[in-house]
Length: 416
Ligand code: UD1
Image (cartoon, rainbow, N blue to C red; front, side):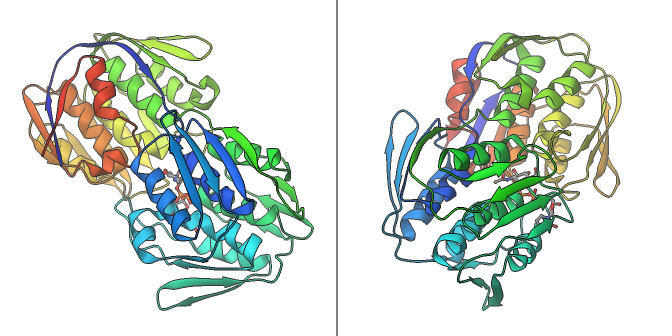
């Protein structure tokens, strides 16, 4: 599937932000810790359907309704294995590791393979589960983990890991004793998962800080839970509004989750009208160059790096973008060069962007989820026509992206 964009059309109107994909995935995995969950504000994107298939493959039942709700029943789990087919489609499949070993004492998950955005090992997930008493082996490409009942441990992550923290948190809620996680990820999605687990009866303190304390309980109960809005989707539309709209209102935003994005947009000169749960933004004449370095939350998110890079091609002067989390996450650079951008790799995980460059439409290829979003933004501001190949990456994480863009006036469409 391809996308065709006719660029330089001035946009305007309103966009409603969907639920956070990176919250929905761990929250769905947490259904394996109990027997039923009723989830709201779930974005219907490909990754969610992959997680649905994975849970169904384990023996769970999932009902979906039109209001972005999921009803998950995991009372009759029959298999404890996440096969390679699922894991290769979506690395976040690793999130079933913690809940399955905690509840069933056994799990087999295919070892995640390489990834377009760079090395993404799971060594810290495994090492820390071992500290909780799990026996872990890798057999024929599959992680095999066993434990009669996990015991609490003092865990310190050598490197901040979002899904790593989530896996350990889900393992610890049913473990015996008090687990302390040091150097924990503080991302809003980690806090969202902790809030769900607390509602289910888990005893968790300190989520959102460096140290999380979890007192294990014997069982967790079914609940209803609505997840947070997607901060990366919000950031993506803020850039679109700031680059090519006569006025865009972006609704359903948690301002406290995007302060890092807001401050960088303002530094670049973009004028935002920030209200309680929505932001108004419009195109400005002159953008300032800025430097960006990705960091774990509350730092600037790596998932916004590619979209900001496109914005910085329009700033007058030299900007630097450094990705400290995934230094190999620069596949979009070669594609942006095809549109005429002036971007140079200047170090490991570091590029310079010199603007302002008039981008001209071209045929490009999407290489990963956020790179695809950056190419769409580039196509929206470029002259002429841009064709984006392999657009399935986009559908993994942005709900109704094409439709939402059409609703605010974009000339964008699918090409078979
Ligand atoms: C999550 C997000 C992803 C985001 C990333 C960083 C989900 C489903 N995905 O991915 O969108 O880009 O956080 O914010 O929430 N690392 C190790 N060993 C490990 C685990 C991680 O060395 O066992 C390293 C990674 O290579 C990377 C860093 O730690 O350099 C952070 O990765 P991590 O936070 O684990 O990313 P994910 O949880 O996979």
